[in-house]
Image (cartoon, rainbow, N blue to C red):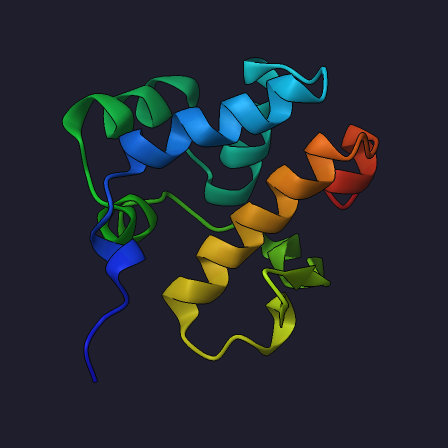
Length: 116
């Protein structure tokens, strides 16, 4: 089965779209970074390194220090698909991130987004 094309997309090309989506709703780049770091375990330098190196999304998630143990608590719909029902582990991680950015853009409190 061929891989989905999003896997080969550069994270650096998707990242500004996440920031734009958040900023349109009066959220900040720092909040986007906080959400990404919470999910993946990257520190600020590690996240910036991934962007600067131009790694694809598959590599971005493969090199993530540690997916947050509460990431399995992320539930809901993204693009008409239930996040918790996505079978492919990489696609599920991508959908987790999409869902978190959606919640940020919708004005949800950071404590709830980070599943505290």
